[in-house]
Length: 376
Picture 1 (cartoon, rainbow, N blue to C red):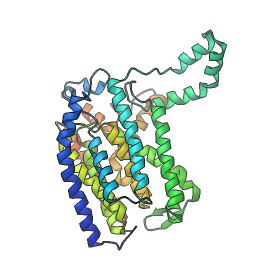
Picture 2: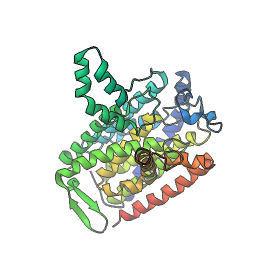
Picture 3: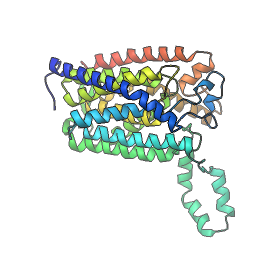
């Protein structure tokens, strides 16, 4: 469903959604904080090495999974007031799938047992000495999978209790595939072209499918990686979804304007409680869910090429991890003091507030650039 670009009526309606989501989230946030404390869903230091420095030790005991606030409020408002099977069904569904994956990871990291993760050397040893020939054969057959698991595992930072990296990627592949099917088969031929500023459209045909899958998976993990300092992910997402609201409104895309405005409203309340000292933290339930929704909404308004710009700080943080892993594997040394990038600046003595504020400003600038490019 669409209307005239720059519609005053649509903007007024979006403001109502934004204000309603903000008020509702402010009401629910204290209740969620109390519930998380009661259920003991808080940060622990046994396996989270980032909490072992004196400056970050104060975060021990802070509730996590605060992202449930955003996921819940956005889902409820959309289901009741903005439900359109063609436009909002899949974004909310994929956000839910990604959020459930994140929730499982959060809960397992707190209450689960340490997961077994065999190295390549260990598997090769078992291939030689295991008493069962069937098991030795199985290890030989699955050796390529072991190499893949170990390669992917190099990009993970979990302590070994939660969902393993290759398991997480499998479910994200599922979420990305659902999105790609929706874009290719349900939204129509216009969405099989890649919009390019100034140059119009590039028809990708079926190649849009792997591109969408890759972007949904990468963006979800990028937001997850950036969620490491109080206020960083929440404030950055606030700027991003505000930019998406403006772009959607400019183009007259009703369902996405209202959906993005709803996310902005909930993020205002979430970020209020997440600014240092945080009353709660987003957790994977929020970062994976909102990261997937971010990618879907940019793709769905046919501005896919703007994703690395409107999500700049998330992509910067993700690529810092990629660069770090590459240098450690190829050159045997680190490129950054620590990855992702915000930890690198912490090692250089920057305060958490200084990093977050400067990252916010840089990110806001690129969001403005994305909005400007959307006019051309």
